[in-house]
Length: 156
Image (cartoon, rainbow, N blue to C red; front, top):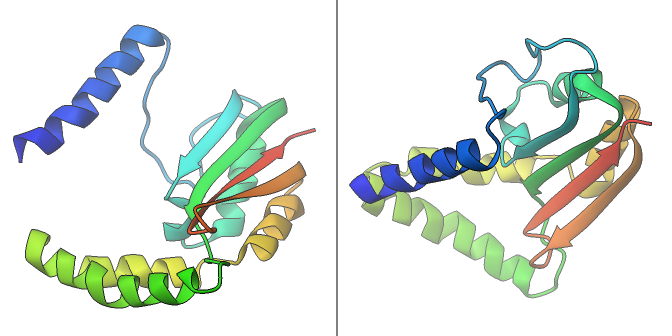
């Protein structure tokens, strides 16, 4: 258990050394506690699919970015490689919950993980959602057969 706690601590410590002005804040993605135009970049990884109102979170990302600011979102996506899609479906439906039961003693959070991935908007729809709040130059870069993807956009 101690090993899992050390890695994030080291990452945070290195972040503070490399970027002394870096601060961490916790808040609601749908109502960020920052002034309009406060940031040059907004980065979220594997989190936006857990936000109840994704459109509100995207609007907040747009609001807190300065003109010229960049939005980056790393998120699970819809596998688009024939063969890999069926393999990934079988793996996520059976192996992931079983591993959760073995490792954490509870498969429910791992079933939620898989369901949240399946309910997340497909790349084209998510891109349209990003554009709908005002972002431009929206792109989608698939990773590993589109198991995950990087969504990028600019506030112009």
